[in-house]
Image (cartoon, rainbow, N blue to C red):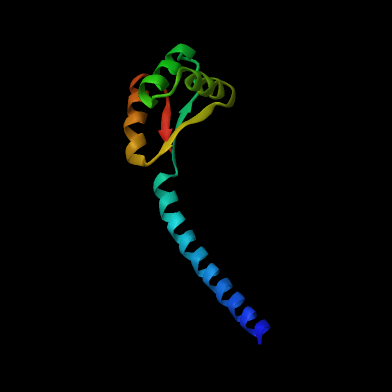
Amino acid sequence: MIETICHYNLEVMLMHTQEDLEVLESEEVSVDEELNRELVVFNDDVNTFEHVISALIEVCEHSPHQAEQCTWIIHYNGKCAVKTGTFDELAPMRNAICNRGISAEVL
C-alpha cells in the first residue's frame, strides 16, 4: 500500500514538473525574442582605437577597460557584440555610433 501511494505521488510530481517545464519554456521564448538582440560593431581601416573606445564609453556607457577590450576584439575578430538588449534600446545607440563614422548593426 505504501509503495502504491509513493508511486502515485511520484507520477503526479513528474507530470506536474513536465507541465511546469512547458510553461517555463514558452515564457522564455517570448522573453528571449525581445531581449536577445546585440549591438555589433564592425572593424574598419579608418577609425582609430581611441575614437572607437571613446564612442563605446559615451554611447554604450562602457568603462574605459571594457571599451578597450571590445575594441581589441573588434580589431582581431572583425566585429564584437558590445551591448545586448531590446531593439528599442539598441537602435539609438547604433545610430549614435554610426553618426561617429563607425559601422554597427543591431542583430
